[in-house]
Image 1 (cartoon, rainbow, N blue to C red):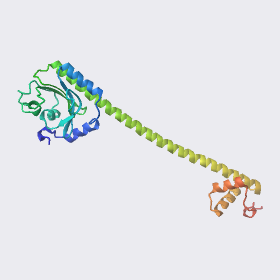
Image 2 (image 1 turned 135 degrees about the vertical axis):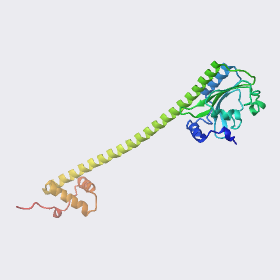
Image 3 (image 1 turned 90 degrees about the vertical axis):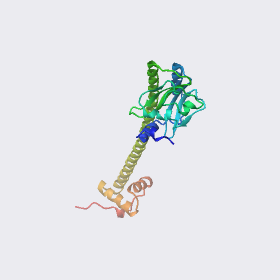
Image 4 (image 1 turned 180 degrees about the vertical axis):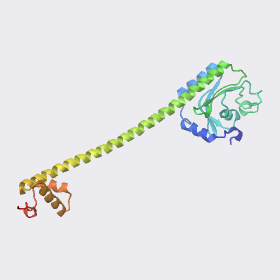
Length: 262
């Protein structure tokens, strides 16, 4: 269980910010490994870590000098307290510093003495974890070293933001593609309906022409005949028209209305 004093008041909001990057439990990544390698080399330390503070654990996205450790419980106070401070945290000799002298990372097998961490802070002010460097010998970091490590922490956040932006762009592109496919299907459906309507009207026109020619009717009377023939046979008008055009089987002359004599 995490000590309550080490949990921010709005930790659920911070965790939501962490999870939006979808970075936890992802495979090793050269972009982050280059940062930790550069940090370790520049400060001449054996251990360098990009850590992210989850609800009950601290997961290492990248690590130099800790090959067999992927994560630790959140309650080793030295790491869990990382999200509580917005400024760099510098411990020159953890065995003498009252803030750390009883910490298990100091008294245990790791034997931590020097510790410098920079918070990984999002654009909206949430501390996700740290970029930290560790040595088993006491030492003091210079202002330039602290500034350089801060720049490297900024590079870590830049990578996280770039990846988040890329995922959002991919999601928008996928959404746009889906909408385009839906539009294409609807457009094709409308085009098919239009083509069917044109073909149907053409058939009806041809059928009306046959009726007008065969029975000497005007267009209005021919349409009355075609409509009555459709109703009598309980069929659609275009189906009746297709039959008349393809079979030339015309209605009985008795069903044909004649022009009224004047």
